Image (cartoon, rainbow, N blue to C red; front, side, top):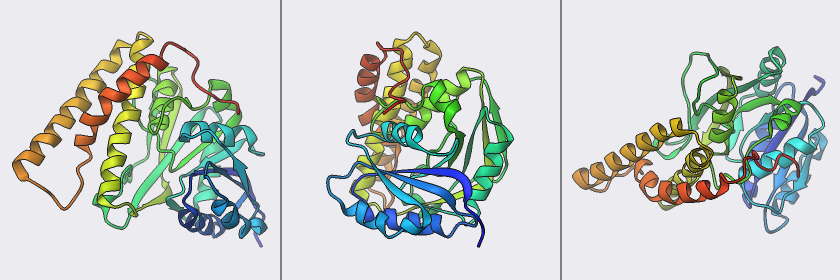
Length: 293
């Protein structure tokens, strides 16, 4: 039997035991599998804990996190992880059998870089948010941009925690976009490696997707509002870009009528203003967030 790879996996969840089981099955099937998987659980009951108990033989454990939000959950998991190289994913993803090996290899190449990978749709592509299917590797160094996907990431925990970790105030989403923006603006490197692969699953109803896209708008608005408050006027172009996209989405709905697919763009119109206000308030404090539990 192949020895476990010296990496930790951090997997946040909240009340989705069936999805967690599916994800953990894929992690257990990796060759090699990770030396530990930390399931950061913000659920209101013990349903996730019962699922995790089924995987004790492959070093899966639960870490309670009573504060909601992916950014905070990832920080808590990073702070508690045993190994310096940490792989991140989400509970509605399954990973390729090579995922642990590939993530370890790419993270080992450069301790100062963040590594993000391909996030492929599983099911109806139109019903799966936050995917990237680009088959070409890329390197981003300095500048600004939103190129991270916490569904598929590899990093060095000490480096990221020293940098300030995720901003736990960014909620309910876009914690990865905020880290991406801060990381690149600081002159650091993000690499996109397409052989580092997860599948993001189609499981939400149409109404759940609509609510999710509004939540995405709120989170992204918080990123913009925070950085605007801190004097970064360059972020204004992203605000204008997203508002334009949202208006085009609303116009398309009026012209074409109801569609069988849920358009993500109108969610920006509803969510961005709320997020901008929240982010502006959060921007009064220049600390990155809650890197320590």
